[in-house]
Length: 53
Length: 232
Length: 237
Image (cartoon, rainbow over all chains, first blue to last red; front, side, top):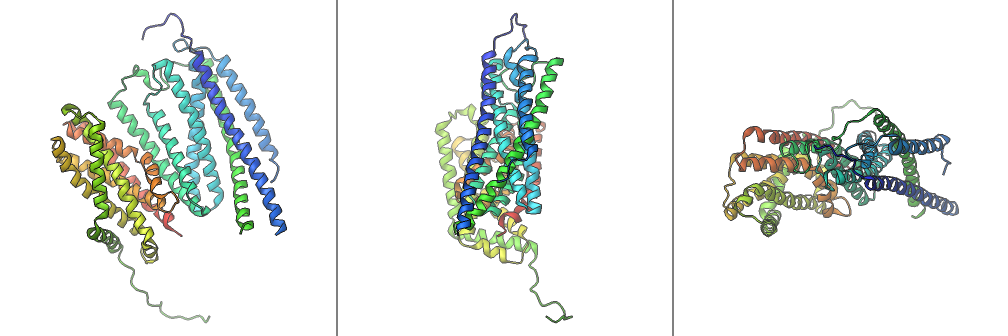
C-alpha cells in the first residue's frame, strides 16, 4: 500500500459514527425510562382497582 | 414499586462517568491514525459495543438453559434483558463497522465474517421477539424463548465458522488482504489505553443496563399478573 | 388408604421406542399417500420458484453451472418451510398432537417420527425436482456427491425445522413465523450445501469439498442432539 503524504480527513465519518453510537444508546436508555414510567403508572392504577374490588 | 437501590443509582452515575472518560480517551487522548485518519477512532466503540453484544449473547444463552432446567421465571427476565441489550449494542457495532468501512475500503458493507455474523444474530434476536409476541401464556412464552435462544446460541458460532471458511476460499474482491475488520493498523501505547478502557467502561455500562432492564422485567411481570387478577 | 403389598397393577407393556417412531412416521406417510396434498403443494411451489429464478437470473450456459446449486437450495429452503408448516399444523389442528402426547411413549419418539416423515417428504420433492431441473437446463444432477449433499442438508434442515415448526404452530402468527425463525439459524447448512453442491457440479477437488461436508455433518449431529433433548419443552402443556 502506498504511503500517503497527508492523512485523509475522515473526521465527518468519525462524527457520524459517534453521533449514531450516542444516539442509539440515548434512545435505548430513554425507552427504558419511558417504559418503566408507564409500567409504574399501570401498576398504581391496577393496585387501586384491586383495592376497590 | 420500590425505589431504585442505592447501588444501582451509583452504578448509573459511574457508568455515565466511565462513558465520558472513554469518549475523551477515544476522541482526544488517542493519537490520530496515520493512514485512515479520524474515522479510525470509531474502532474503540466498535469493538467495545461488540464486546457488550457478546456478553449479552452469552448471558442469554446461559439463562435460557438455566430457565429450562429450573422453571424459575426470573431467568426468563434475565434472558430477555440480555437479548434486548445485545440487540441494541450489536446494532451500534454494525453501523460503526459500516461507517468505518466506507472511507477505508470504499464500500458500505464488507461481507466480513464478524459483521455478517453480527447481522445474522440481530435477525435471530428479532425473530426471538416475534416468537414471544405471538404467545399469551407466560410459561410457554418463556419456554419457547429459552429453546430458541439455545438454538440460536449454538448456530451463531457455527455460522461464523462457515462464513469464515467461505471467505478464506473466496477472498473478498474489495480491499487488500487486511480486509479483516480489525486489520489495517497497529496500535500504539496510547491507542491501547483508549481501547482497553473502552472495553472496561462498556462492561460496566452493560452491567448497569442489564440490572436496570431486569428490574424493569420484574415490574412488567408484576403488572401483567395484576392485570390478569383485576381484569377477570 | 391401607398399605398393601401387592404386585404392581397390570400395565400394558410400553411400546417399543423404535416401534413408536415407526408408527408416527408411517401415520404421516400413509395420510400423505392418500391425500398427497403436502407433496403436491411443495412440488408445484418448487417448480414455480425455479420458473421465477429462470427469469430473475440470466442463466446462460456458463453462469448456469455456478448458479445451479444456489438456485436449488433456495428452492428447497422455501419449499421446505411449506412442508414443515403443513405437517405440524395438521398435528395441531386435528388434535393429533394431544393424542400423541397422551400415549405412553417417550416424547422424543414423537420428535424423531415427525423428523423422519418431514425428511421423507422433503426428499421426495427433491427427487422430483432434480430430474426436472436437469432436463430444463441440460445439467446432469445425478451425481452421487450431489445426492449426498442433498441428503445431509435436508437432514439438518428438517431436524431444526421440525422443532421450530412445533413452536411456530402454537403461536398466533403461525405460518409466517417459521421462515423467520428458521432461516437465520439454518444459514450454515445453506452455505455448506451450496458450496459442496457447487463443488461437485463444477468438478472441484475433493479437498475443497470436504470441509463443507464436514460442516454439514457436524451441524446435523449437533442439532439433532439438541433438538431431541429440547423437544419435550416445546410440547408440554
